[in-house]
Image 1 (tube, helix red, strand yellow):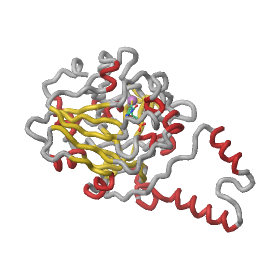
Image 2 (cartoon, helix red, strand yellow; image 1 turned 180 degrees about the horizontal axis):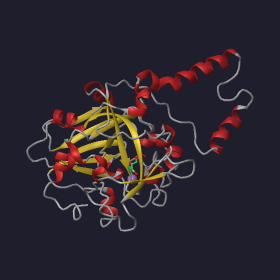
Image 3 (cartoon, protein in one colour; image 1 turned 90 degrees about the vertical axis):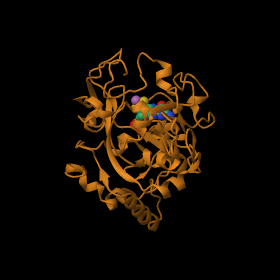
Image 4 (cartoon, protein in one colour; image 1 turned 120 degrees about the vertical axis):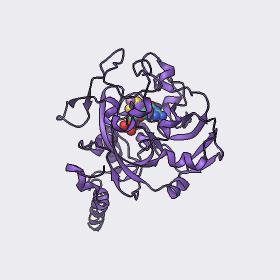
Length: 336
Ligand SMILES: Nc1nc2c(c(=O)[nH]1)N[C@H]1C(S)=C(S)[C@@H](COP(=O)(O)O)O[C@H]1N2
Ligand SMILES: [Mo]
């Protein structure tokens, strides 16, 4: 683990990760010396704003560099999905159902200050600000595959910490068997929450859940960044779940509440269409979605400009060696 990183080890040098921004700043300084702006020397301001609208994305929210210790891949040697793809091809229905909607409409999301309430079957319930989480739990890079139930996938260098570290701090009671998660509910900021048409018919807030042993598994992380910087709003800033062996919809974004329960909690996609989306949602090429095959996936950003490389989907998204023990004795066709 963490060895033989192949092609991509170069960018993992912390300096490498911040270079584009440094280059940008340097370029701006040079242009300022020349009495020109960084965006376009001869383009009037109003036209500049119009240009970014024309190209379909408003000014992007600022992302801060994050410090982290080490990087692990858990056996996955795949090439990283380019950052511009990771932050422009998203599912975040709170901002609309098209893949480009989140980048377009999430930039104004207020992510600072932010806190996560931890409640329910725990000995130490309480509210954790993002600052306190960052102070308490050092970040690590995790390069994980993300496999959407829609049969596309990416390979993303997340920054995060293991959810179990937080759970150990709050001490689940003997009755805790599940962990429920909830996304921010704020229709003023999230256009999809004030219109069923824009929000894809989901009853917000978006909710998800894991069995306690899944939540305690070392592969399950709370992520606060990607590609060396804080998360962009479209990827679930400031804090989201990442569960790499499950379909992407389990990896809930912009979390405001973590609630431990005795009973299995409701989950958004399962509630919307339970015959299509189960509670477990483990990546499984042998169990097709009622409307499409799950045997293969399109790897975003590979295979040329207009296409994407088609590859075989692996059981548990390639993480079986680490997680199959969680499901011993279960029928994964029934518990999909
Ligand atoms: N709150 C919330 N979380 C969400 C979603 C969403 O619509 N709302 N979409 C899910 C789905 S279907 C996927 S595939 C992943 C996508 O994460 P990404 O956009 O960072 O790649 O986020 C998941 N988390
Ligand atoms: Mo998804």
